[in-house]
Amino acid sequence: MKLTVLGTSASTPSKERSLSSIVLNFKGLNYLFDCPEGTQRQMMKAKISYMKIQSIFLSHFHGDHILGLPGLIATMSMHQRDYPLFIFGPKGVKEKIHKALDLSLLKVNFEIKAIEVKQGKILEEENFSIEAFKLNHDVPCYGYIFKEKDTLGKFSREKALKLEIPEGPLWSQLHKGKKIKVGKKTFKPEDVLDTSKKKTGKKISFVFDTLADNSYSQKIKESDLLFHESTFLEKLKDRAKETKHSTAKQAGKIAEKSKVKKLILFHFSPRHKETEKFDIEAREFFGNVIASKDLEEIEI
Ligand SMILES: [Zn+2]
Ligand SMILES: [Zn+2]
Image 1 (cartoon, rainbow, N blue to C red):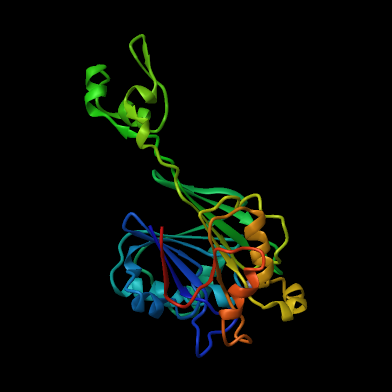
Image 2 (image 1 turned 180 degrees about the vertical axis):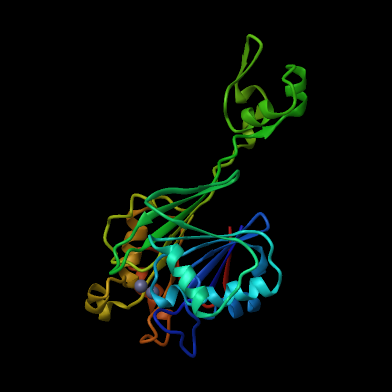
């Protein structure tokens, strides 16, 4: 699993930084979190395939998070994408996409499935799930949690055959941790799984524009990685409060409270030219932190 921070700026791109978005690459597919202006070029620079974007998760509809969408969709269409694109976002996401496409006179030759999110699980796949949770910004805004499924152990073909469990759906049920019945006999996952090989799935949390209150710290608890917006340094903490954003120090405090393993700061106001001070200020509360740079890659 690899994560790439495509850009790290807030509100406008700057000479130093592109606007904030993050790509998660998992089992060969890409999942994009926010799609501001500049996303396509940043993906090209990072050598990430936009044709392999399976889903896009939009935190909210402020321009610095969505204005790259029509351009990206246009490119996908020009390159003959012929499979659906899922776009998740707050209430009204369908209308917003429709308007963006209309504005740019775009005829899209693939299906766009717009899905309005509510707090809770919004996507369940074989190997992972995605959960949305509310943030506290001046417009409806969501954070997202990517949770890789736990593996219960390595499936033993030999054991399953020896126990005369017929190959097929029953095997996959056992693999998923469910009990099954064959005739009168009941089998448990432990009967066919080597549990010494079990692995807890990774948890990655994305916190976009928000006042750093404690409302979501339970949700992101014990994340392996926490991406947290950090628009301002402490000297502009009043501005952070006014505009419902976080400071680096507040993000550090949340990371500490939520017992995450690593904190990655992004979404820095162009008022701050340098980003070195962001991790210094966050470190007051939380040691394992980086102020990410454009095109920063994190493997996990
Ligand atoms: Zn923003
Ligand atoms: Zn915003």
